[in-house]
Length: 485
View 1 (tube, rainbow, N blue to C red):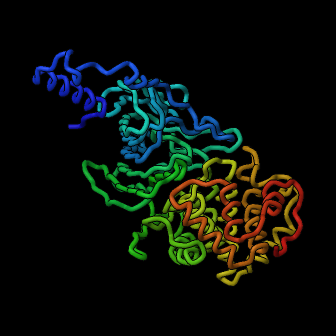
View 2: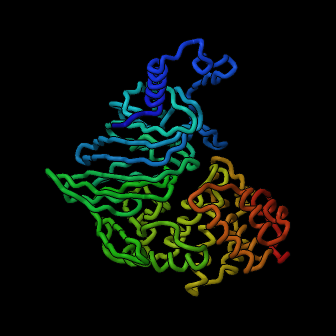
View 3: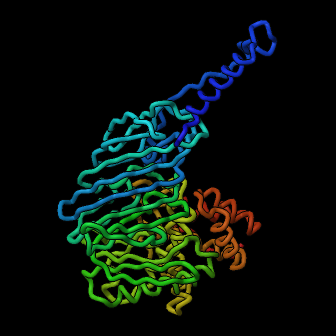
């Protein structure tokens, strides 16, 4: 039987009172006197958690007042009716005395909410689910919220960044998108600063596959439906969660004691996509030699074919790729890019979206390193080509502070990669690769900022690097060709 801390506190109080009565204590006994007013605990003041973490670029993303440790998500999706039913268990810790707290949930209808097993009131404010527990939540205490919900999922439309979230497809569905997507299929604290572990149980009609993040937990079938189980134990940012439902060619295996699970849509003929994804572990092994140990418990990739998805995304442990990347043949460059994100973007996640170059700059530079490793061209040659041929707009957009409209601009990717090469030239290969490995190790499973990266680079290199980073990350003019310091 679950006993809340609140219930336990009341029980202890009754026990003490009873003990005093049985012992025959009275008000004349010194030990039986009531405590003085000065000894009384300060009354707690409970308040609603913030509806947003206050990210400078997306202030309403995520929520304040608590930290999630784990999500257990169970959904059933019927593609024929485009209907989803779900049950989410959110295990969290209060970081403030809360009278209420929010979860992000776009669309979908909430049917019931409990907190620590007791019914809780709930209201909706657009894409916010506001939950008021029966009793206040105390700072430092854990709590469990359970939400049942359902309806027809809808993607989120961002006027600047386009469509993202749960998309109904011709043979199933896919949930994918950056900077937000998770809230379109389960209630969540939707900001990368609150990473958590995830368990998924996804039930779909027999004959369809449901692929998600982490370690596959097998499948069971009953009454025409199949439930696929997945578990991601390493902390994961919410936008890195995914589900792809449809008909896929599945390949499985094991590498270095970890499961390998990849899925390629049957909408594309077997060929370049299969060959590229098959090299996932080979690319990961090379990147491990550069960045340090691979950070997760599983490998794999998912290839989808849908006109709305013309990108690849570093969904944790199992990146998703548009089939368009393989139309011209095998493409391990994009595989290197998304796998590099497993270290930089996934394991080391953003504390705020403004610092997205930390994700994309590293992934771009990983493409250059992979090209050098495979004798296509050196990283120096890649840098020189980009530096010489970059459009003027690239130099006008500072990748370290691109603005909301430019967070996925060429500057963030290409100038971000050039920033790392400029650092490499400035400090030398030994210090540079020590910086990269140390960054991945010290920030593993956490979040990070540009300021922290600069401080680390200066600590390891022993050089003052403000001028370099100011020019490459924050300047609006083409920096001078990098030179050793």
